[in-house]
Image (tube, rainbow, N blue to C red):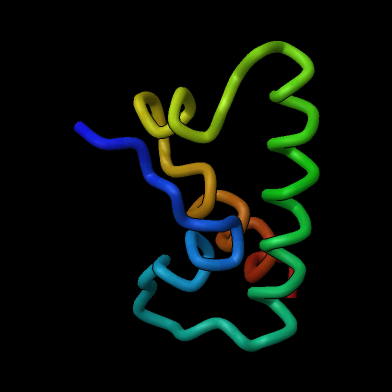
Length: 68
């Protein structure tokens, strides 16, 4: 399987939910994803690694929209 080369913004944009998110929510989710990936990188963990166990972009968007 080829690695996913999409950017955090593209990964957030690809998340599909029954209730659409706003532009502001997607921007906040992208920032959250970017920050979480920066922290993970310090441990040698990539988004490709995280994809094996969960949907981090979806979790970021769900978290942001839940807070709204």
